[in-house]
Amino acid sequence: MTAPAPLTFPLAGLLGEPAGTERRYDVAGVTIPLADDLRLTEPLEGEVRIARTNRGVIVEAHLGASIAGTCARCLRDIEIPIAVDVREEALPSVELASGHPVDTASEPEVTRLTSHHELERGALVADAISLAEPIAPLCEEACPGLCPTCGERLGPEHAEHEQDEIDPRLAALRAFRSADSEATDAGDEGRANEAADDGEPASR
Image (cartoon, rainbow, N blue to C red):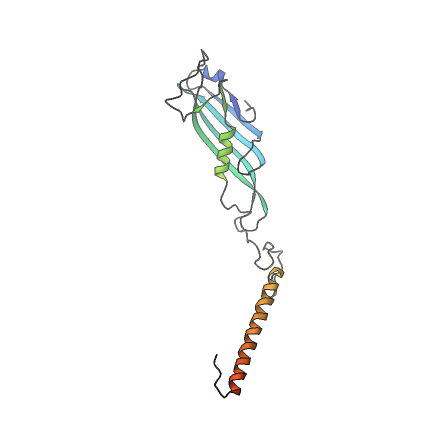
């Protein structure tokens, strides 16, 4: 069977089956909105297995996708592969036979099917993808990072810099420090000359 997007599974038929009955859904080409400014670059692919229990259903999902990201060393745009594994129990919110609401007070934290006996897993998978995002993704394990002089990515195509070459953005700071050093030296020399004229030893 193929799962309807976005990861919503109609289970009224399965709930009428004995415990142990299961359904398997192929997930292919599914896209869902993500939180935290994340964006899918490859759609979700994988499989979802839903098995009937004496209380409700057990859901197992094994999904993969890719999200847009930035290399933590060289700052290039990259695609980050993500694997998501989900296993949880879901219980009905209404009785299958009568359609009356189920008392959920004793288990308020349990995942519930909708009033139409559907399992909606889009939000759960989106949260799982957010949690699976690496803290410092890399474009490759041996990424060399950025050149501290020019800011370009290091690697075989990066040209070596002269020893005294400096980032143009820092040239003004170097000129300022040079001028300040020259002024200090001139002041020291002037005080030394004055001390010599007075017949006193120069002090540094």
